Length: 332
Image (cartoon, rainbow, N blue to C red):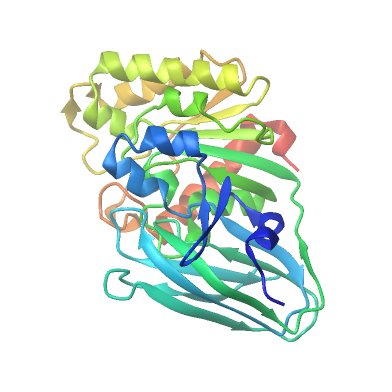
């Protein structure tokens, strides 16, 4: 069974657009209007191409799944990997350790022809274009349904820097725990972007929870005045665009240089600004950032800012606990 662009529409989660290109099928996590706004800054435009949060999730009785992927930059990182789960268990991990040296890959998974839930997590730090997607021996393919929808806004950490396994980003672990399809609207390097919220795709399904995770770039790049203004405008925009949707407002997590002082003040000032800005939204609950990831460089892939796979596992575990505490509706 060959899967074409129109077939992907039912099987894909986390993509706003699915485009047929000469090289294959490309999946966009932003709308054309959002992409146009992000394109005003080159680094944002590149990072908007990544497949963060995009996945294929379906049930099939295929005997083999195979496809060809071509990689394009989607971040400042060079690697691109897919994760494939069979019935919730990681069964395959493949791609390219350096998309500049190896810009393509062939991905293949052997199955047994019985009915299985199959989940393919896209690279969160690169753009992957798929070609010749085959479910060999399949007599059916049915999209999965999810109990909830999550929407993530954030910076590089929420985009997935610097996990090697895309399913080990904190966003993917969170979505899996709560059986939620997710849309990841995070962009590496971003500060609070009220404009991006106001460009949300018209007619998009209403999320059950919005997770906001900004502040570390605002602290390092902005004045305290600009930080405060943008953060307040961001939460006001969420209230306007997504009325009635609860928001988990994450304070920035520990970073190695957090004892420093910037134009925005001390790091505790950054957490205070996030807390005070979130008060603009009646349904926002602040999640303390200090206890999400251990304050040890070895939990960070770069030793200072971006968690690695291990750091993300702590991030997700602690955030799951906090969401259940703050939002009783997600306690089950």
